[in-house]
Image (cartoon, rainbow, N blue to C red; front, side, top):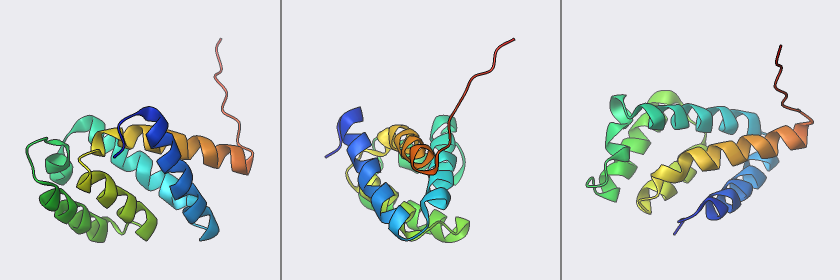
Length: 116
């Protein structure tokens, strides 16, 4: 069960290893970022995913339907299903951020903040 940011970071690391080996890391990062944005909005067809009283089986079903509709990669779908099954979809934003940081490090992308 994922209960902390540290657990979410470890989960993102494992997902990254799989996605990197299958040359899908950039795609998975984009998909995770998009789902995290949906999570922040709590809107649309994904709304049941973020309600605590919806059974995990219904959440997994919703993820499968959205995955087909949106054409999500298998690693992203499996990760989202695992989070939903464990009632831990709320850590998705941490997983997405950690995954993106790992991808940026691996590809040599440096984030900078410009101020004037």
